[in-house]
Amino acid sequence: MKTKRVAFLSMCIALSMILSFVESQIPPLMAVPGVKVGLPNLVMVFMLYKIGWKETAIVSILRVILVGILFGTPLSMIYSLVGATLSLIGMILLKKTGLFAPVTVSVVGGILHNVGQIATACFVMDTAEIAYYLPVLLISGTAAGIIIGFVAALILKRLDKMKL
Image (cartoon, rainbow, N blue to C red; front, top):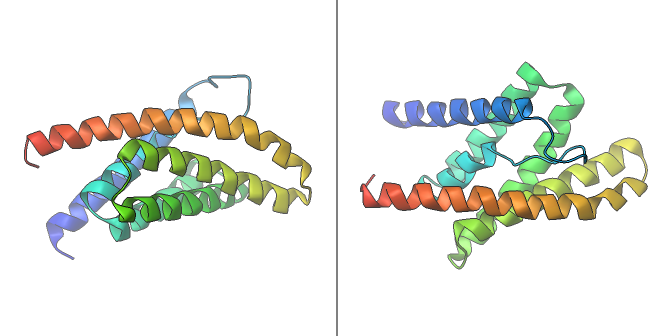
């Protein structure tokens, strides 16, 4: 890998980690635990459209591991890894079709992240009853996906105008 590329990917990892930390400092937007905007996903959607899926996957997994080590617990890292992986797979597949805008890709990513975390919780807690929480998270994942996708689309459009 070229030095500039490594430096750029390192900056993307750092930015996504900063956004993770910032998001962790935001008080809950609702009385529902686990509802977040998904600020680090902004970097992933941007990278998916501007850089490529392989680099996006590397940055996503490294971010989850590093944030888990620095700010989380082993269990929170497992939840995040499953959610991020499922989210990323869905976003990559949708993006590869060329049929979907960043907003749609981001919404699917937000939804799949929540599905992955609920599935992990069902497995870890050995109960399917936690799945009753999924509709609330699907609504919040959709809303967060719209916000993140819209911002990512604006950034991508501005960078295209600047020919970057």
